Each structure stands twice: as C-alpha cells, then as structure tokens.
Length: 72
Image (cartoon, rainbow, N blue to C red; front, top):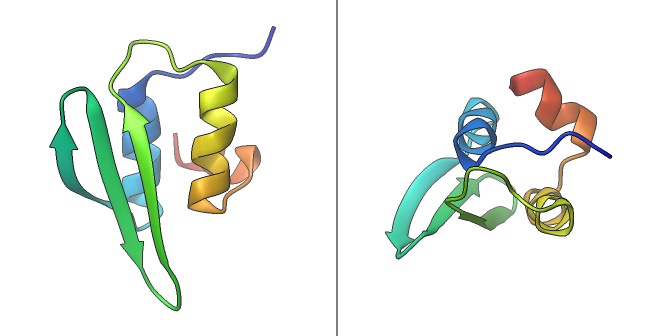
C-alpha cells in the first residue's frame, strides 16, 4: 500500500514548487501556479488523500510523485 499524504503536506509541497492558494470553497482548496502555462489544482482538505485523488492532483500540477516528495 502506498503512503497516503495529508492535504497539509501536499499544499506545503506545492507552495514550495511555486503554487499559491487562490481560494477555498468548503473543504476544497484551489491552488494556482502562473508561468508559461497557468496550472490550477484542487485539493480536498482531508487528513488522508485517497490514492486516485493524489494521482489526479499530480496530473493537474504536471508533477511526478518524486518531484512532489522532494518538496515535502
């Protein structure tokens, strides 16, 4: 079973990668990175992010698991 990360860990790692929190609606936090492309990702504010949701966050952020883990 792969390690599950919390929303707090993922948000900190994305912030270190240049993302910033844009808004929050309910338990969903919207983060955005502006560069050549504008990347937007939504993170549910849960203690443990499900594996499929984690993979979706990585896809939206255009990052690999290894890149994210370097920033945690």
